[in-house]
Amino acid sequence: KPGVYVTPDQQANAFACGRNPANAAIAVTEGIQYQLSARELEGVVAHEMAHIKNRDILIASVAAMAAGAIAAIANWLQFSLIFGGGDDEGGLGFIGTLAAMIIAPLAATMIQLAISRGREYEADRTGAELMGETEPLASALAKLQAGAERVPMDPNPATAQMYIVNPFAAFHGRGITK
Image 1 (cartoon, rainbow, N blue to C red):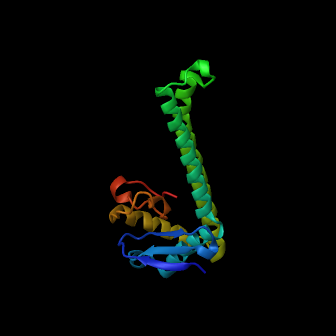
Image 2: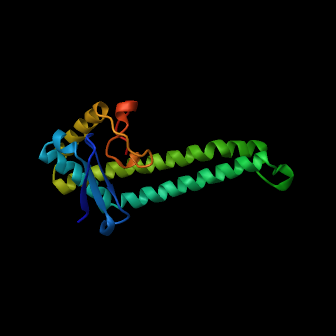
Image 3: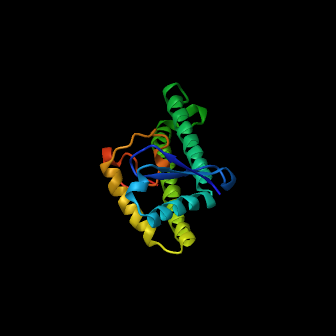
């Protein structure tokens, strides 16, 4: 069983972390207990347990590392364009290097978003299987989104993508992030 923790935030939200089921944890905010029914909270925890069961945190970490590597290559190309590396050296050339600098980070972001979205749908499906029904999670997600738009939260931007709904929704007016 994963450890379950409560954070002192008033915005209703939750996330799972850990590289595998043996080293996993689920965190819910204090605010979630006031906004959701017991069955809806069970749906949210089932969704987060599904992330752990499906090893989504590990998959997301690998995707983030791949995106970081692609971004590093784009930076290397940028510096090679600025500080040398002309056509006579067998490189990509000016146009090729410029295109790679633009396309590489976009491709990395698109891949990461596609993986993230796919893992969310799979967590919804697996969570519904764990519960035996879909309504509690669907109802909880609607309430969590509405609550996130009303109650601000200020997490570290590096961890914001872990939450079940965008914790910055009150500031940006955006929806479900994972």
